[in-house]
Length: 107
Image (tube, rainbow, N blue to C red):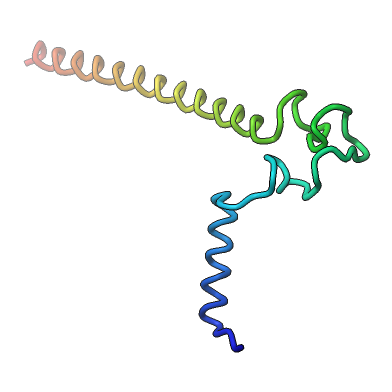
């Protein structure tokens, strides 16, 4: 059976897309990170963490929850910068009105 280079290229594209979208994944969240099954304690792991949470993760959070927390932190930063921008633009509008009034007074 000959497999055309085009079809193998298309399949590798699909494989890349599917793995990036988590369309197929292993049996539990975080399995992709270390490729191990749950429950086997490896060196450098705490006891009682389901067998895959390593020490560098926050205690009690699996990697996916930690990602969500980091995302929420980023969202809060964006919201803060948006409110800063709103304040600045309101100040700019007030200054523009002041300038217009001063011009009228001068004329």
